[in-house]
Structure formats: C-alpha cells, structure tokens
Image 1 (cartoon, rainbow, N blue to C red):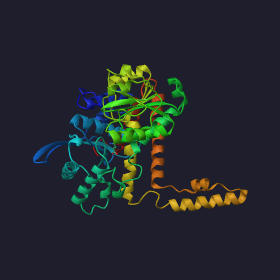
Image 2: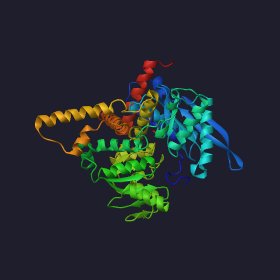
Image 3: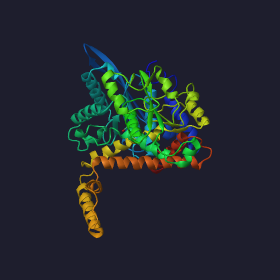
Image 4: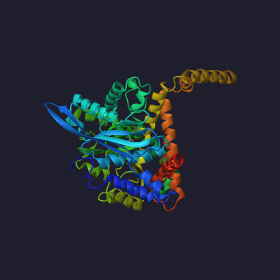
Length: 476
Ligand code: GLU
C-alpha cells in the first residue's frame, strides 16, 4: 500500500469526476458543446526540474492544471505527495471549478502538485523545490493575482505559501497587487485571520446546517442538532483536526480518529486537543489513554457512528468497503474520498453523502477573502470597528437611561464589540456555507430523479459555470 490512508488507486480519478459530471449534466438545460467545454481541462503544465538534494541532483516531477478560465484568476491548492500524477491534478482542478461555482467564489478551477514525500526532505531542500516550482510557474505565466492563485493543500501550509510569495515578488518587482499571487499566507505576509481553520470550520458549518434540517434527520432516524452525535474522522491534519475540534466544542462525541499508522476508538468520545498533545509527545495517536487501538486503520471507517468525515485523501471508500460502512451521514472533507461505485452503494443504503465540492469549500472561500484583502490593501474591520463600538455603547447608554436598568460588565463588553477581521471572516464563511447547503438541497429536492447530493451539487455548479460561458460567448 503506497499510502496507508488510501487504498492503492487503480482507478482513474479524472474520469470518475467526468462520470459524476455526466450523470448530473442530463438534468441541466445546456447544449452538448457548452457541457463539453465546462468538463474539459483547459491547460495542463507538466514540469521537470532539477534540484540539488545533498550531494546529488534530483529531477522533480510537478504539475499545474488550470481546468477552467470562465472566471479569472484560476484558483486551487498545491499538494506535496508521492501519489501526485497528472490524472490526479486534473481531477482536483476540475473539482475546484465546481467548488468555486457552488460557493459563489468568482474563480476558475486549478490545482498544482509536486510528486515528493515532504517527510523525506529537509526544510532547506523543500524551500529550494518550492522556489524553483514557483519560478517555473512565473516563466510560463501560470501564476499571478489576476492569472492563477495557488494555496495550501495536502502536504503544504503557510510556510510553503510564504516561499511562493517571496519568489514571485522577487521575480516581479513593483507589482502593486503582488500579495494576491498566493493565499494561505502567514498573517505577517498578507494572510487573513481565520484562513488556517477555514476548511475544517466550513465542514463544521455545512454539516451543522444539514443536521438542523428536521425532515432530513427524521429520515435518518436522528434528532436534529449536533449534541451527542457520534463522529468519526479520518486524518488529523489541518482540516481533520479543526473539524474535530468544532464538533467536540458543539457537544458531539469524537468516537474514532483514524491516522496512517492506526486508529483509536472510544465510546465516550475524545478531546482532539488532548489527542494532538499525545501525538506530539509519543509520535502517534495510538495508545491514547482511555481509548482502544484499531490496528488496521481502514477499519475505523466502518465503525458504527452518525457522521463519518474522511479528511485525508481520495478513494478511501470504494465498492469493497462501502457495503460495510455504518455511518448515516458522510461529510467529504477530503477531495474525492468516495468512488462513483461506492456512491451508488451508499445511496441505496440511504446514507446522506455531503459532497466535497460543497463541504470542503471553506478553504477556498476564505482564500477569496484573503485575495480581496490583498487587492484592497486594508485589513478587514479597520474602518468600521471603532465606529460600531462607539455606536453600540451609545445605544446601550440610551436604553439604560430610558429603562433605569444596567447590563452586567460582561454583557456590556459583548454588546459593544465591533467586528474584528476574524469575526468578519467567520461570518462570511458561515453565510457562504449556509447559503450553498440550501442551494444544493434545493436542487436535490426539486428533481425526484436526483437521488444523491453530489449529483445535485454538480447540477448547481454546472448551471452557474454554463451561465458564465453563455455570457462570455464560447470563443471570447
Ligand atoms: N486546497 C484547498 C482546496 O482544495 C484550498 C484551495 C484554495 O484556497 O485556493 O479547496
């Protein structure tokens, strides 16, 4: 097994995205040519470049795929993984197109990948690889605030984004909007507060909203709300950890956590922060006090639970293990964790699958906020915060004078608070996930022939991308 979090991929990821697309396309009004254009990958840039690793030269294989240009810039993360190949990057770029459309983020879809295992390189070597990759993108005009804007993905984070920014800025000096060439940056380098947790928080907001829909919960035999729900999460990286944290804080029970070296189970539920601390101390989530080890990690996906959240890699639920899945709701925090065959099996079992292209769109949504911040050159809240606070205090004073009653110091602080950057980012994210869930649900409810939320999400996305091709003309 090449990567213990995913069964070996013998299938073609891009064609499985095409299959889901075709299934949904029949429910839309668009002519064949427009559908073909939406589906196609517009540009594929495959690179090979040399990097000195220790005393030898290594040839690095890397990609950047721009799936669609119906809106610009193109947008999507860059992953560092040994599994990277052209097919995978094309599929992930296509998912970005549909993802941005669903959450009304005005970007085309893209994705990048470098075929390395970052654990095998020193930070210095990773920096050399990242900077060279960025230089290759600059050379071919494949990066820029109005062209194509990378972001973190599997195996990358703030550190890699700051290397990309610095390389871009030194090759394009004086570009006034240059900060917008990449998102997911550290705050000190033009990042936005709330970006790091955005995908996990978006997963939480999306599933919380679904769990608030009484009629959907009744069909599953569940109570509305998150309190007491048993949640299983695969992958304790940035997305999985933050999702786990928000579910835990909302009163759900994190009963099973799955990592590449095994899984841990506790009926009572676990605090993800304590698990993370345990991993920092011991190097593994296994043997977490009060939990039971499951030595075959993939078995964790099959434990009885209410919500299963795969938050690692693609293709982890396939025709083989899908019949054994006991979850009532599956929230796709990862991109493409369920194969089309598994999708059919789960739909027949009555499992609600909340699709990746909606559920994990929180990351790109907050990337959009970061990009807007970079173009506007001003921090969110800088202009209005103090005005709002003064106004709130004034209103409170008037009410207190009129009623002769006083609120507590704690209440006063809460009411007076003007929105900071992070408050505004969370508010924008919550609104985005809420609106998108109801749009997808509406497409699902409207057509009785649509029997899963993924198809409904594709229908919603295709309609939006189709409309913008129609406005642009096919050959603008
Ligand atoms: N890599 C993330 C995704 O797959 C974020 C992309 C972005 O922020 O551009 O959605």
